[in-house]
Length: 79
Image 1: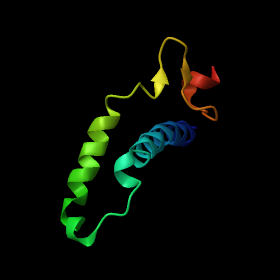
Image 2: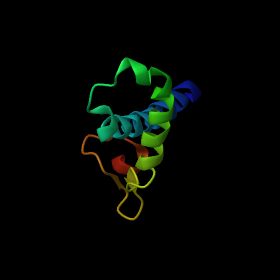
Image 3: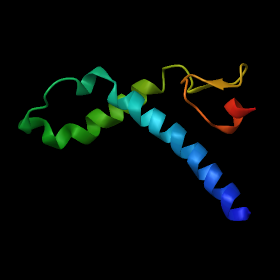
Image 4: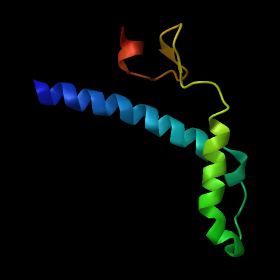
């Protein structure tokens, strides 16, 4: 019983992590081909993309208790 609850909690958190990673990937910094000369700056580009996603709206809208994505099954959306 404890393992089931723990697995559900991990799955819920994993969904939100995957959504945040998708936001970063959707950033326009990664829509173009990155030249080999910029290989060493990839981690800096990734950091900038992550910082830019922090200025976007939240993944979960707290007042409405629904996620911004339709197919969510987190605890707040299931209620």
